[in-house]
Length: 186
Image 1 (cartoon, rainbow, N blue to C red):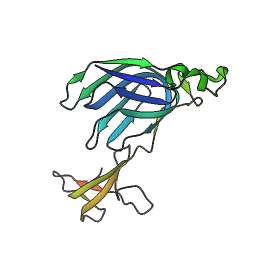
Image 2 (cartoon, helix red, strand yellow; image 1 turned 90 degrees about the vertical axis):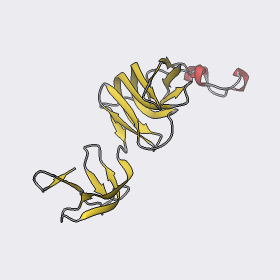
Image 3 (cartoon, rainbow, N blue to C red; image 1 turned 135 degrees about the vertical axis):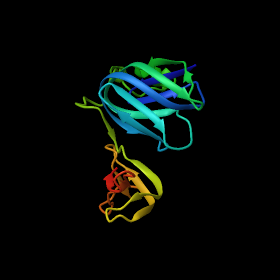
C-alpha cells in the first residue's frame, strides 16, 4: 500500500517503489511546481494528473503554493495496475519535524500549518509546464515544408516548437495531413 502525503507546500508518495502515474482529485487553487523532469503534470481546477515522459518512478510529486484539499487519489504502477493508496494530510508543523523538542528554536505560535501554504492563489496553474527535450526523426515539419529532425519542445496547448527548450529562436512545427497533403499546426 502507498500513501499520498501532502501539506506545507509538498506532495509526495511513499510506500510503493514502482509508481508511474498519479491522478489527484482536489478542492482549492494551487500554483504547482514540477520536481521531476521525467514526469509531466497537467492540472485543472479539480484534477491533477502526473504521467511519465521517461524513465524512473515517482516519490516526490510536486511542490505548491496556495490551498489544496485532496479528496481522492488514483495511483498506477509500472505495469499499469492500480496501487491501493491512502491520503495523509500533514497539517501540524510538529508532524514535519525530525528533531527533539529541546533543540527547537521556533516559537510555539509559529508551529501551525494548514491547507493553505504561502498565501492564496486565484487559479490552479503549473509553473514551467512545457514538455522539454523531445526528438523528431523527420515526422514533424517546418513551415516551408522541410522535414524536421532534431530537438523540440511541446507547450501545454499542444504546440510543438524547435529546440529542446523554448527560446526566441524557436519555430512552430507542423504535421503532414495524410489525406489532404497539407501541413497542420501541432
